[in-house]
Length: 487
Image (cartoon, rainbow, N blue to C red; front, side, top):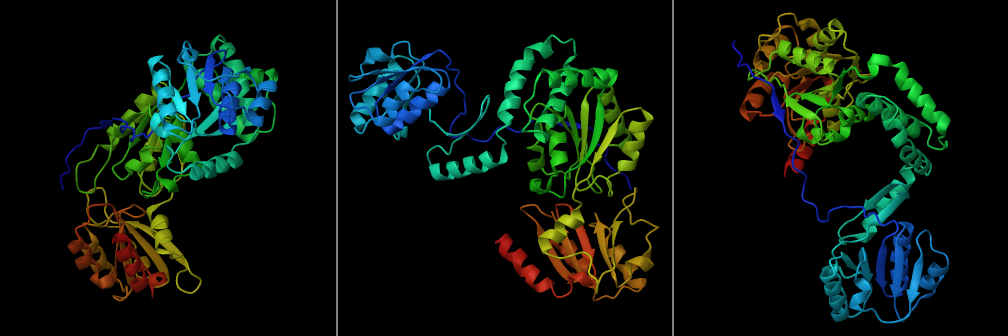
């Protein structure tokens, strides 16, 4: 059977989704800002501005206790109180204007004066008069995270902030401060660009694993020596085979995520969902080198050559495969190509399609009473036909759960041979199309009837067939669940 040759296709990073607000961080150290109003809400905004190093001028006739206390003990920049009504000239030369007003007319006048002065304005709790908003803040300065729901759900933003507060150790502030302190020294250290990147990767690993430690200059020298000790390896490229899982991006492992976020080049297959690619480093070159069953395909030799060529050019290459690269992912050929070229290679396993599908079905692939082992079988060989070396006696074993990968075109032959080998025609079977993805479909039927139902379904996504006693009694409930999900 002839297969249309496909050439690698570079894929542009997807356009960013619509933003309700543009998240920006103002540099306010030493700059003058104006706050009109002295309420507790205005005091909180003035405190934030002072913490950012701004010189805060508060103009108001009504001063709350919170505002008065702030003027005597600001967190960073001075807070100066002017006991009078605000005037348009107060805004001249300011970097930011913040106001709090009960009356919409006065709020509109303040916003108009700020815009006439060419400065961004925020009117507290009145979004129609705001050029920018204050989000919820997670403070590990200089690591700062801002969270906004564009005013739609402030309580939700606060809940997210609480989650992040619990996840991010306070000690990250110390590490971020050290990074700012070391950056200029690292630039003059003589390390190459790749060496400096390796330094920051080692730095990050140390920060994540030792968040409570306070980094000092001895840590800087140790990390620098570690990079220099790598010699030419610090500038050398590498290849990482990464399992993308069956489709749902939430099934990515943490190690896979780290590989995607540090990659220079990502060579990915058709079976990799585009949602997974959203987690990749945006600047990485992304190239489709996929093989479609019985359709256009890139030559494996071309893929091997690309991996080696990019790695020899000093790039960090991620070979991203659907499922687990070690299960029907041609990993052996790619490992051999890298080892033959002297390219370091790492393997990050992924959740294979059978595991992902079983998890969604709520079925254990093994069972002490009904399945003593699990076997993974490919539905087609190099030539696209049913493999000629399948152990049909093992397929017919009643105490085995069998997962058949990519059998859409050969399922009729597969079932006929399995039945001829003694497989019970009534053995429960399920075909899962696009497992774990939003468009997942399931076909439940005795194995003898599966070919006709699968062919009638005309599947367009990846197909996995699983059969065995572990699926007994589950077809009806699971089918109803599938139908309800699709509806």
